[in-house]
Each structure stands twice: as structure tokens, then as C-alpha cells.
Image (cartoon, one colour):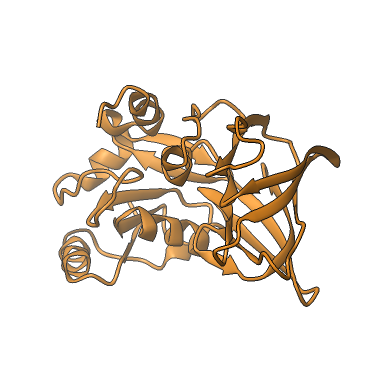
Length: 253
């Protein structure tokens, strides 16, 4: 089995990579049957972004602080584990953000796209779905659109819903909403185009972030899911991602 090993910059991840390469060899990612990512969830997201054009699935092993998207780190029987692994396909969100100078930035997010206030002033946003205004003015600290895979991350911390991996929906979740006070967000069909307009960008500046890429001083953001740019993650049967997302709904901590 042709394996490509990539690792975060931490000493523990780099040491693990050297041991795995000694045991199983290493090929360039473009020649690999499977890419092995060593680190935490943040490094997994960077790996998915860096290698999303390659057809090879990604198998992660936890060597970081957070490992929801990772399997346990074990050196032995790696090819056998990969053969038994279950595949989960993730579809990214596309963010198209227009800043105060009229410049447009495009970025992808496998977890979420979030808008946040940059100052002590609350954000004032217009929310449109498929070009229909649903909220003329949302006063809040921010808002985010989450994929099912990202629904247990920032979205859950903002009191958004946990989404089953195969549900074909997205979560639209406000962050500390002030007006409308009782609005707690919405679950959207995955084909929905979400358009967010900053109503007072001079007094109330907003930043937009797609996974780890941030655009400052945005005036408008459009978010949609790309169903033709999916990536495959591999999970040990006992760490199946779909089951883990389901179990999060019953977590007590």
C-alpha cells in the first residue's frame, strides 16, 4: 500500500512520522493510495485543504490536543487498519467575501464559515436565503454556517444543533443574538445560498473566517456548499465519524 505521511510541526508528531516512514515507507501525496495525517483536528483541516485536489482519502491519527476527526495513534498493523476503515465524505462550504475596498476573496471551509464583530459594537446583519430576506436586521456578536462535520465544533459551542453526517443540511447559528432575542438559528437544506450583508460596516466592522482563513472588514458574504468537491476521511470501525456525531448528542460534559 502506497502511503504518504504528513505531520504537524510538533515534536511528537514529527517523531511519530519518522517511525512510521521507517516501518512503511513514504511516497509523495500525489502518488499515494492513502494520505496519513498526524496531528490534531486543526492539522487535519489544513491537510484536507492542501490535498483536496488529490483523489486519495485521508486517514488521521491523533497527536494533537483535539482529535474528533482522528483515529488513535498506533504504529502496528496500519495497512490492516486502513483496509477495515469506514469512509466518510465531507463537502466543503464556499465563502465569497467582499471587503470594504470592493475586493472579493474566495475560500473553502470543511467545518464552518463564521462572521464576527471586530470591535465592541454589536454586528448588524441582513440575512437572506436564496435571495429572499429572512431577517432584515440581526443584532448579534456574529453568525456562522456549519457543515454536519463541523456541527460539533464552534457551532455546538454557540448552542447550534448537532447534525447527522448524512442529513444533507447545514446549520445557521447566531452568536449571542440580541435582536431578535428569541431567534436561535435554522437548519437549512444543503443547496441553500446564504447571503449576509453588513448593515453598518463603517461603525460596526465585521470579519469573516472560513476554517482558518480570515477576511477583515467585510461588507457582504455569500456561503454555499460545494457537492462536487468532496474529500474522503477514513475511520477505524470503533471510531466511526457518523457514530461519534450521534454520540455527541448524549454527551454529559
